[in-house]
Image 1 (cartoon, rainbow, N blue to C red):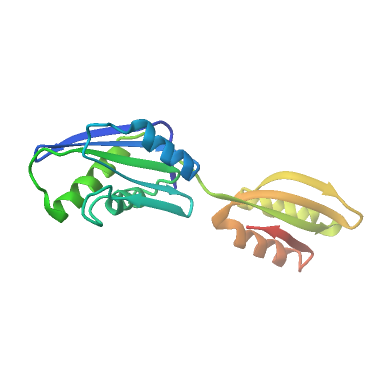
Image 2 (image 1 turned 90 degrees about the vertical axis):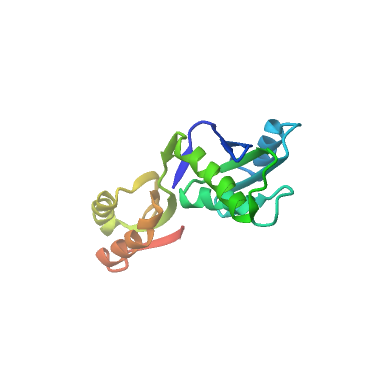
Length: 194
């Protein structure tokens, strides 16, 4: 998964229409819509957009024929695995009709080129898990954590052992819990997580 490190802009003329793609990092739908309002250009014909924030997404064709603008913009975002992003493609109509296919290619293509030219940072999704570990299995815990590259966030000793909160790559969570359970013959229990 990738995130924008700074706002991006791409501009292209297609059959006399000017398309300006602008992307920004956002963390809430309200931020996404505020970005749209900030960059809105009064003389532009259309402001088509899409955002993706985790599992949430939304898009708008802003008066273009249904499915020809917002959805292709969202597809460009998803194909490049970018998250936490608002993409707006502004169109100044140039007098030549592009047709449904031409519009979809123009909006989706400009969005894709904007993201391709932007500064992206790869981010590995992580999860937190809370484990209860008996005193006899603390050594097993730390040996296994090293293999998975898990990060210890906090630990607290209890009467029966240790409770430890970990941060681990989300794709490794189940494998880590299984490895700990197997290595400790059930002496390590997951209390909460992913």
